[in-house]
Image (tube, rainbow, N blue to C red; front, top):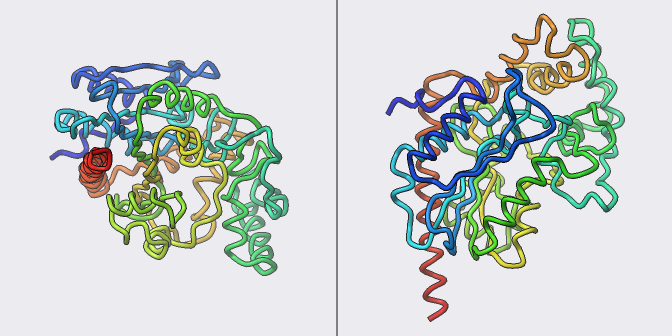
Length: 380
């Protein structure tokens, strides 16, 4: 298989290919245009869906990509490969698939992880009528992690301040404070927002209308970023003692979900998370459906030799948004660097992404079919 043929160079290309493949495979499709902006080419920003299988299926695989916009390329390629490799023709009985392309179309189009409001969607799915979670140490790191310039002197100043912070609190505290999510600095890292984003509201609408009849939901949210070459990292956010976690472990293997395995593939201990889409949708569906799944990462970045390089993609995105602008002379180079972290052009990576994605679709759908049969036996 020529894996490269499934990968697109722009959001607009990826969207058109998704729409064409869905139509050719007989999907029922819908489009949701984001009214809050346009793409860099002036084109619309659209979240697209494609439904395969019985409209009243009891079990549905909900598969999303582009939650962190710039990470959308491998997920889009995976969806395209599944649609064009007989996936829709090989569904278990009473099972459907709902593909959601570009949950965050703004970030996908512009090459950024965050939304049009610099919001990390996987920190935004919580009850915004309640007090937002605190991140006590973020205030201390925000200033030195947000330099006005990316020249060498500014970077060295940032690194020195970071080293002093680590001396006081430890390396883990720095990683956790930066990435767990914060709700106080709209121009900062992993900002969770103070209200539901358009993408959040749209996903909830899709789930409310499209999955109201389903009683069993499998969930795969494609992401990328950790260092590697297309291997999968399964991040199951269900309670480890729950039936949902056991179900996911049955599909993908207990070792794949084991924290030791995840941390070794991640490269460090996983930071705390708040407001992720997994939890938001699980809570929304809880009244009528069982829910099992994971956020699944395609390992993609090259290993980083220094702390400055380890956070460079996040640093570049923030600088483009709030300091230099997208018309800065260095903007094309910076966007290319971000892209290479989340969707590199390495042939080996593309091959592994498609191979591993198709195997994941196969095992997940087989698991949903088995779940159906168990439910039928229990009802007899």
